[in-house]
Length: 143
Image (cartoon, rainbow, N blue to C red; front, side):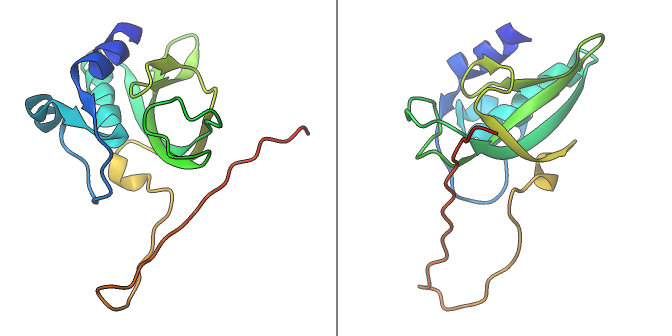
């Protein structure tokens, strides 16, 4: 699984996308680029092909140093995968950053399909030039 995650990151160029939706795995492979959502969908389908349970996770990437792929601050929205490994349980894999484990990952939603894990959903009604923005700040504090 680590080799698959590393292969996705090594062979597919990361490109941030603000548009809705996710590319399918074949589309990501054909284009050779994708967002963290696309990386996660590709990796989840690869794990499922191996007969393993895989679920998509969305949330935030805590990266105060700003050195991880896909970050634009300490509260960047992010997508990754959890794979069920028999005897070990659900293990987080972040193919975008070639990491295993939950360090720096703050989950908000988990589901089988990426379109079911939007960290924020809703609607907005306004003029075409109106700007709708959200800013999230993640602070780690001692309990």
